[in-house]
Image (tube, rainbow, N blue to C red; front, side):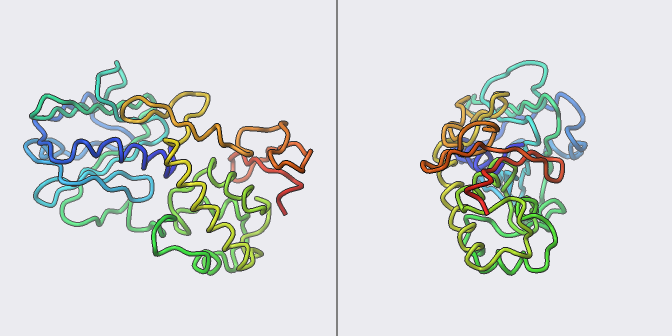
Length: 269
């Protein structure tokens, strides 16, 4: 599933649509993960005034306080041209340009928000990891008393949003903290280190255009691949030598909460 860096990469790729007026929208099916709103065609005739991101959701701001909410699910992507049978939403603009939403597995979401940003999918979300409202102190406080692994805690979108399987593994490796350590046993200094490495990892990943894995599913709006996998220290490197210069250990893989976790048992404590 695309994580914060991938969604932010898509958001930046869509910014060229700001100021353009929508001519029409074509829905090639009745639903994605959920049914499309009945008034989806109400976006026609409106100009895009901004494009925001909240966690892993894109918020396409339109005239008259209307927002198109979009989540890429597992395999969703936005592009500029038709690709085939999995093109489920086609938006044409007055200037002749086009935006196509393609999603082979149809786990994506699209909905409309009228006025503000209140929506049932957004209301429960925690702080943005790159925003001013999050800090090592706040992370430490939110982990207090939690009897789950720190890896599982970082995936909890009520604690911090946008971090998924890839970046949690990378952040914890660079912070030198075992993914198996219980969240309640994370000290303040450890929380500060996790916070600092989160900033570095996510910003570096955004600059690299996100992460396109071997399945090739993730692509930017212009079809570009994400090159952060070249920076992977542990993710998807099971059995390979640890990237720390002075460590000869091999990267391990374990399963936590049904998801693969990659780590070094020597470098991470």
